[in-house]
Image (cartoon, rainbow, N blue to C red; front, side, top):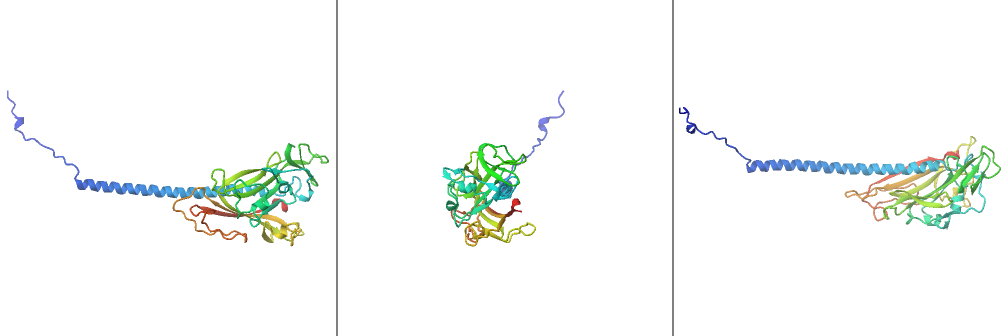
Amino acid sequence: MMNRFNTRSLPILRRHEYGLTLIELMVAMMIGLFLALGSVTVFTQSRASYRTSDAQARLQENLRFVMDTMEPDIRLARFWGLHNEPALVNVPGGFVVNCAGNNATPLALTLTQEVAAVDESIGYVAGVPCPAANVARPDSDVLIVRHVSQQPVPPTPGRLQIRSDLGASDLFNNGINPLGYGPLAQTHDLVVNVYYVDNGSNLDPTLPSLRRWTLDGAGNLVDEEMIAGVENLQVQFGVDENGPDINNLFSITRYVDGNHPIITPGAPGFLPNAEIVAVRLWVLMRTEQTELGVTDLAVYTSPDADLGPINPGGVAYPQNVRRQLITKTIHLRNNR
């Protein structure tokens, strides 16, 4: 039986398929290119913003570290255990403190001065017998802080320590508490820190850093880096020129540099009743890395009239870094 329908006689239905025309392809490519450029722009801006925020955050964090380290040390100045009177500290002869082979005994054991400073007008080399790690910055001050450890400690051979009660104290280093003290007397480690700014750091000889000479367990001053990036340290002292009032309270009458005559024994104009009651720090810090597109044109003016305004430019203060300045006044607890 024959099929009633002859399939070959039916029309063949064809589906016409069309591809992209050249114009459509070019339009699609242009749209994709604009989207890609937009994504790259957003990424670049986000990355630059992140770098800026990160650099600022690092600067602030580093400055906080500087202050968190120096402030407690300064506040403890003139703390001699169970009293705060430097005249009661007996320093027998025969003690020798060295730093890198140099005699630093007067620097470390002038305990009648709880704080002192070497002004940049005098210079690090003239004021500190210890050699800087690289080269001390000539336009930066040096801060010296002396006191004893906050907590009592057992006597330790070789370490400079102070035994104290309410009316007397003695310096010793033989590991044996001095005689003549009652059961309530305490022994503390002697603490001496000499802060200065160096032209180099441990990782980069061209990056300035804040360093300090600190008294170790063998009775020597040893050099250690605190943090890189500090370009300048200026120190001024808040002084009460008249001494305590009838209530034994002090008030700051003026701020002076570390070499000012009124606080320098033996200098013309020295005021024996003047008391240092506060330390004002001025710290200028920079980022560790230079940045393209960054130009620091600010002028940084310190409270020290001897130091002129700092205009970034040149090797000492490059312009292509970020900087931040902090100043803080720290009151001495033990001069009240």
